[in-house]
Image 1 (cartoon, rainbow, N blue to C red):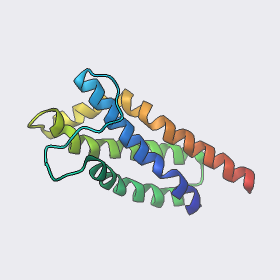
Image 2 (image 1 turned 90 degrees about the vertical axis):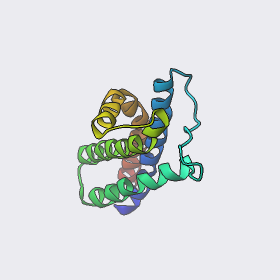
Image 3 (image 1 turned 90 degrees about the horizontal axis):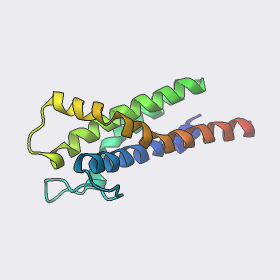
Image 4 (image 1 turned 60 degrees about the vertical axis):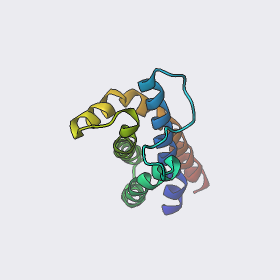
Length: 139
């Protein structure tokens, strides 16, 4: 069970990465690019910060995923944790789009970009379903 979740968890990192790329293209009215926006702090690395902020979601997915038995519960867990990761990414990257953001504005930023989030989670969800089917066929 844990091996399945270990194979599925990187889909959350991929989803967070694609969400930031889609969100930044939408906010800036620019073409889609796989380049992450630069953070304001000159000593920070956008990729490292993105991965570090997905670690709590990864651990939570491993914990809850080890307890979940039904596929729909695992998919729901993946989507909810993907939303948590997206909120953390909005907290991190909001400074790239303006100087000051309140908590309500960051939630609004996440709410407005929810269609991009759902699109960004699709590759991870397809990987999740594929590994579930693969392990069921092997059993």
